[in-house]
Length: 300
Image (cartoon, rainbow, N blue to C red; front, side, top):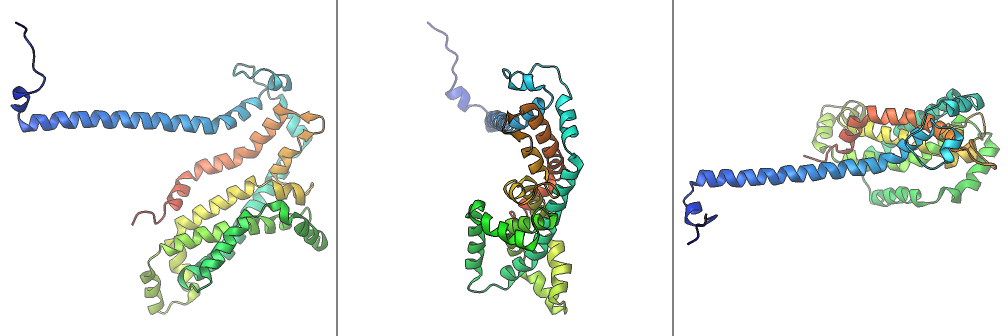
């Protein structure tokens, strides 16, 4: 009585195996495309949520103070009033140079100390190596305010308060545990046979490090240095407590726009944008090197 079109059964079973396989591959490809689409949407959503505070800071820098404290809105007339006020109040280039000096200087000093230390722990370990690594890592768990008073008194007695040299030393000590841990991990991934071959050819320890170890682990060393620069650039606690005017970096420059009268949001946002812009551009230009270094030795 009723004509029914069978969706499965003998007719389907009678389909050639090749056609059935193609149908299964088509369904699998469609599911894979949908999965990639959803993952892409999720990734873009997370990226937007993370980047939105930075975007809002940049937009607020182009507002007036009245617009900045008014109801949040993306529709406004941009103005350079806040940037002009920031430039008139302080010498941006001076603070920027201090940031570059202490960030690059502390990174070079940390690498100079960290490479030999990580080499000895990776290739000449002792019974105390693991304990030493854990102890260095534990120093990062100590609140900086816990050692502020003794460090302040030492720097005062040595005449290192409000000096770029003193801030460079503090930043070096701050980043040294992370630098040594990262370099130790990269060096451990390097096959020992390569270094042993160098020793058999008569290479000294210095030649082994300079001609074999550093060139072979250069991506890891570069990513370690980039991370150290970023951490030093963003450090605010020590710069606010150990500097005042001569050696103050950009983090102190931002804090100077906070006053007892309140926060001037537009000027604060303009100053913050000028402070983070160099490191954002630097991170964008070196992102490939950073990812390459952080994944160095992950796949063998």
